[in-house]
Amino acid sequence: MADRYLNFTGTAPGRFLTRRLGLPQPSALRRWTPERPYLEGELLHLTAGEGLSALPDLSSVLARTHLKLVPDSSRPTAVVLDATGISDTPDLALAHAALHPVVRSVAENGRVVVLGAPVSPSDHHQAAAQQALEGFVRSLGKELGRGRTATLVRMRSAAAAESTLRFLLSPRSAYVSGQVIEVGEAERSPCDWDRPLAGRTALVTGAARGIGEAVAEVLARDGAHVVVLDVPSVQADLVRVADRLGGTALPLDITADDAGERMASALAPGGLDILVHNAGITRDRKLANMPADRWNPVLAVNLTSVLRTTDALLKSGTLNRGGSVVATASIAGIAGNAGQTNYAASKAGIIGFVRSLAPGALAEYGVTVNAVAPGFIETKMTAAVPLFIREAGRRMNSLGQGGLPVDVAETTAWLASPASAGVNGQVLRVCGQSLLGA
Ligand SMILES: NC(=O)c1ccc[n+]([C@@H]2O[C@H](COP(=O)([O-])OP(=O)(O)OC[C@H]3O[C@@H](n4cnc5c(N)ncnc54)[C@H](O)[C@@H]3O)[C@@H](O)[C@H]2O)c1
Image 1 (cartoon, protein in one colour):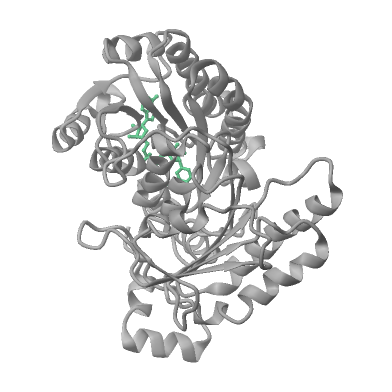
Image 2: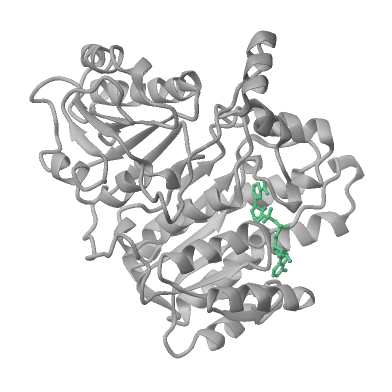
């Protein structure tokens, strides 16, 4: 559904009028296109305190991002502040001193990425200082405006975080802001950065339309063979998507008792590298008015089937080593939402599932498990929301607009990349830094 307000503020009279009236002025976000796949301009690399960097290999990773790495810039497209060496609270002044003079000059649709160290469980001075960076970055995300985003990445080595830094410093992360991402140590497989999923097979549930269709499209763009799954009643749409992407259609209801086994046999003999649990439904009603027949299907589709099919695909060996699972949560599962006790319970359950399964799945099966948590995304699901609630959902985030299905898809593709092996157990919000659950 078109965001008429965003289109209006993109015109000269619209800008003039909204400025005079003190109304929000969201910037049109710069997203990936084949013609302009990278952010252009200068990347300013700053360190909070000389000699404090814990990342000696960072410059070479940043030099590969397609931005021009510079020590000084009057109009940077992106600023990366290495704050990994901050180990006590007085050092926080160094983060302020580094960013204060440059933050105003960051270009429209630019990026501020702060690199932190993992928070220490045993050194409370380091823990306080590193945790402080979280409040700092989340506040900065709310201040920047003009399509600019701020993110904190906690990491141990630049090499393991290269795919994450490339994602954040590209147009693919346009709707990701105010987030904290932890990247662990990982052996990075060699990777063609333009087609990181080449030779991989991906299964996307709920792919006949909306976010699932966009996910399948982006995974195919990045080189994957996509198997698109949806309920048999939308088979015609599903086949259309599969044909367009050179993929395979799998009409199947994920709540069927044997859904996991049927997925496994459809994927034999090569198995599966990327499993995207995207299918989801809503049956909104306040709890007092919610009969069991509105509660049960939401929990069955959004949560129980995700656990059952993942278990079946892991235990049958269908999910190949080096693979990844990406499940779909929602900010409703973080913040809660009136009328959505069923939906929010299912989506919060996804977060519990991901956090609990991730370490064991990596150790036992060599598979990462992460979630995306979309905020307000322009789809048929949100087009059905009443006008005033829809308008509030669109504006109540730092970027002042709804996201597009492709924003969730780009984040999914980054999590699914073999180069993102160090990203595990994360729940990444794709919400333009929504005020809900912030
Ligand atoms: N749109 C948003 O703003 C938003 C926000 C947060 C989370 N999400 C989540 O993102 C996911 C996709 O949302 P969307 O807006 O594209 O929804 P959508 O309704 O447009 O598409 C969902 C797809 O899932 C399929 N599906 C439903 N039940 C199924 C079943 N039992 N077996 C197989 N397929 C089934 C549907 O047929 C449909 O094609 C959902 O999990 C949703 O909860 C969406």
